Image (cartoon, rainbow, N blue to C red; front, side, top):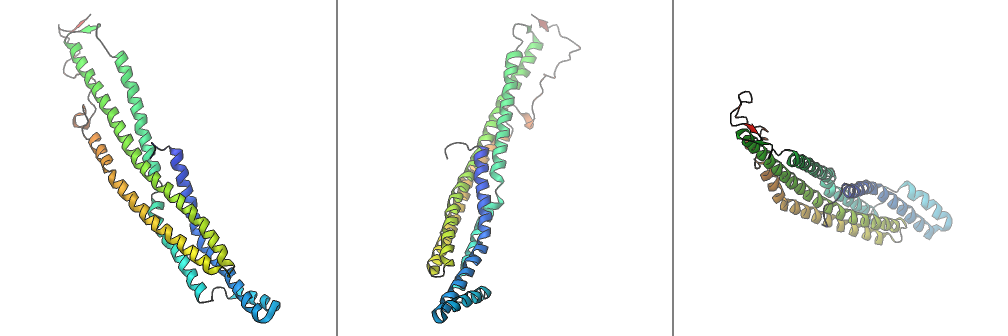
Length: 281
């Protein structure tokens, strides 16, 4: 990975993948069409061999009406190609089901980053305007300073938590982007190869080559899909360290006693009963 991916980058690759899945689902109908044309062409060739031009016309009509009934090499391989297309869709189903995950991870990562920015602004304001040094002294000032110091501590802690959460979620999103972008490249090649193979099949004369090309292309991407999915799972497992970071960062961070933001006042003196130790300077 070459750095955190943007929402636009993730949306682009996921949109491409969605479009490709739709195109793969259209392929069985294209396979049927190619073999229908092959059946017509086969009948034309056979009839023309024995009966000339008139026979070729009659053969074409016969082939068109019996396209789903012809047996042997073509019929068997038509079903094989369609089964492999379905197998590919089955292998990619988990990727289809997980389409929204990378976007959700990145959007949540960005939300934590924005929260970190807002906490930083609040902390900067507190540092600039919250000091009483030179204006207030005595016990009350000391109590105020102690409470103020604790507020500054928890803001540092909260910003650190935001950083860890944002980074961990972005890592998972980037891992998903790698997976989808690799799949997209392979599916694009498959669709091109399958289109060329179906054109060969439709001619009947080159059908054996087209059938071989289609099966080879599908077997290649099915194997790749299995490999990429396994790599993706291994990558996610390796990100368990990121999950641990999230758990640790959100479990009683520094200054958050019992996972609560501390009070902004000291709470241990009565403003209506001023002590002689209170004094303004």
